[in-house]
Length: 111
Length: 112
Image 1 (cartoon, chains in turn cyan, green):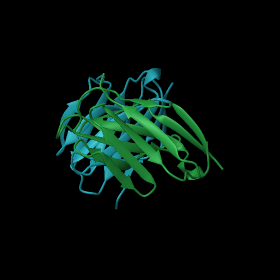
Image 2 (spheres, rainbow over the protein chains, first blue to last red; image 1 turned 180 degrees about the vertical axis):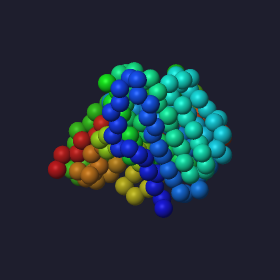
Image 3 (cartoon, each protein chain N blue to C red; image 1 turned 90 degrees about the vertical axis):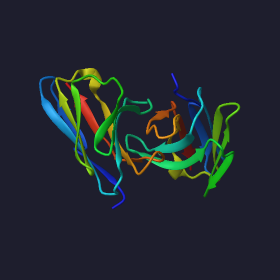
Image 4 (spheres, rainbow over the protein chains, first blue to last red; image 1 turned 60 degrees about the horizontal axis):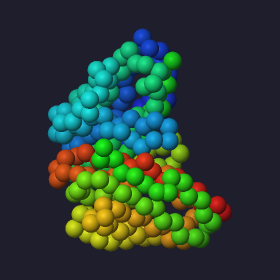
């Protein structure tokens, strides 16, 4: 299994909703990442987990809450989001500090 | 900001032509990577070049790195319609940092 999977593919939520994005990889990678990408912009790093511990938080608002239940799973819990949080959310993993393997992303729309 | 700059922002060429994209960055790097993104999808890693390397090849791709000018270029030879995508350079600045900083990207259109 050489891919990163993300669910759901699309998500529409209201500003009072609580939802979660899920990411999974079975390549034995020890680093996992969340990125946010707005239209026609590059991906922006949000969080990095290394060996299941949060190692980088790029000053992301607390309405985004990451979780790494085990070495294969990464979640992003969403609560009280704003319309400007609408974006493509990308998960990635890497075996070490070099190339990253990206999932297809979750297209999030906040109404 | 350490974010790289890519030029051109958009490039349109005929199938069979070569495409060259450039990337500049501001601070010293551990490595530089190029990724491709098809519209609205995930990124695919193309090639990685380390700070002590000057040139690297992979199939139809050729990457150069000039650390004195803090710049890199990606050459795609004999382009195909399937190469139509956005191309991003990404720099890793500290050994072991796990942190990539992406450039703004070049949108390549290859016309059949």
